[in-house]
Amino acid sequence: MPRPIKSSVAFALLVMNLWSCAPTAEEVKDEIRATEKAFMEMAESQGLAKAFQYFAAENGQLVRGNKAIRGGEAIYQFYKDREDPNAQLTWEPENIYLSASMDMAYSTGSYSYTTLDTLGNEIKSEGVFGTVWIKENNEEWKYLAD
Image (cartoon, rainbow, N blue to C red):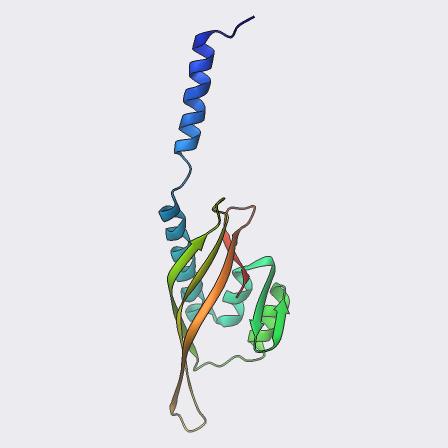
């Protein structure tokens, strides 16, 4: 028996409505920018250890020098062991690349790390960063690799 036209039209409208609710690439990039900003603000207000642990994905990892630090607790301990009350880390994402499904992203940009030496002189280190982001089940962006 053929489907009534009314049902087919209603179904088509529903699908179009759901499809039109999907975020655009620019909206997803804005989500990443907002996440990067919240990450940096937490690092400033609560310290690097808490911020890097909070924003890590369940299986997130850091690569520092020739070492990979895996998992939130290990990441927290890595930064806690190096805690420096004079340190300030700032960064700015300049490029954000998205997967086709828009649930994974790669951000690159510049960073600045400032601290004081034992004589109170400012030491500044600048460079570039790359972070891989995934959107976890709870719809929050978390870094997979940094």
